[in-house]
Image 1 (cartoon, rainbow, N blue to C red):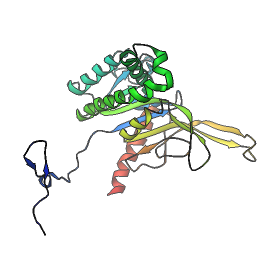
Image 2 (tube, rainbow, N blue to C red):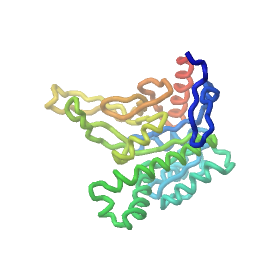
Image 3 (cartoon, one colour):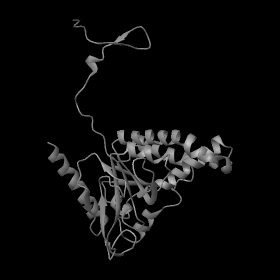
Length: 281
């Protein structure tokens, strides 16, 4: 039996010794997460409570400025000018990934606005600005836009390599799930297209669904509606469920309380992340 170490040819004539390049050391990177949920649930204020945040926003969501003006978050938290085009957005990502700004968390608020910038750029570039052609058979979003989403995620990874966590904040919507093994059902999902979300979902370390706890009473069977109770206690779900999209790579519990402010929500999440690391040992 041969004892020669396996090698592989490169594009030239030289051989590469891949055995010598194997590694077991862990190369850590700051986290990549998606926070999505109901309007006003506290997504932005929770992200603002993370270490040294910097906000990038679209033109449709300047919630961080409202929270600062009303004293709900620290008014010293910086946010860059709202992005009107995809070029603006990529330029700000490049700056965040290269400039020595000292910030530790990049917050994109919100994901739906950024997807709209991607679609607008694809429509301009590939369809001559014709929205009808862009939308026909979902050609723009289905065929052309995913490549731009992948490019965006690569830019976000460069931000992470620069030492920043990346948080994507998004709204929630109900989507019908077509299950080939059972009947179709409804599920809470981030409010982006079905062609965008799988790419972001695979990229993210955490997908956290934030909502209010409700209890249904008075429903006798599936044909009669009950009455909802509660709706004031805030909770974040960290693992997937038939009724909502969620996941994590940090050994988090199924759900965590958000408390009464963004700082408490963030404290609860980071505490659970640290406990998850301890439990994995």
